[in-house]
Length: 324
Image 1: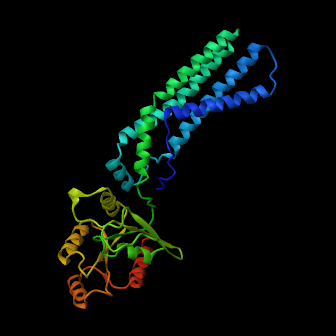
Image 2: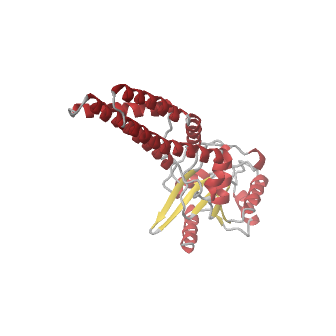
Image 3: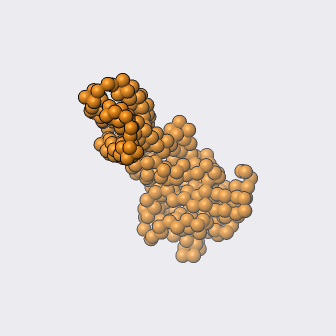
């Protein structure tokens, strides 16, 4: 889901100014056309033009905002869970409903005043309805101020969400600084930030492996500390990706023991409880002690273990092919 398309939401005054500027421009265009008729007839034409411009501007602006938001009921389970954790879904639906209410109300309201002005027979009445309409139209727009503010805050939150596509997906899991981002960079065209300290990954990095008709989506899940009750925002995203996006998990084991062998195995056992297929990739074999690698290999006889990226890639493509 691409959430970058959700439009920035401005204040009520912004949309009022936008609508009135458009109305002024449309009225000037009408005046420049050299209107014919009495003063009353000309005034009616100009004021009706302004009202129509305001109605169209607000209605169109609200519709564009509503359409830019994701379909809340049609989202994947991953995004449903993610939204529920960080955004008040009930309030979001209510606020989007507020925008839709204004979209419909401003048109009906404008049509009502257009009818009133058309029935006018003198300039004072036309001017009275014009002022009345401007005041009440502005009041209508201000009534959804709180909805606009809520949706803009929600948009800012959504911008921090990852863009995950619906396709065969491999999640890369393991402790911080064990080589997950390096594996992602070597397996795909992604260019994640890689530094020699923990918690470099500040979000869910994604990358794609393409071979002929096969395409695999990789998600580099930020290193979890195996602390379900104390997860930060990024770790929550990683946990949800493992649960709801992963068709397969590649667990990265670091034999240099940046984290202890015991803790890494404990995390692996936790991930196994998700019930997903798991492959193990042993990183840093070029700098690890040979006996440490051998010890791990001897202890992991029930899960496929890979030391070379090329071999891991071949196996992933094979599994992807079977899942087509």
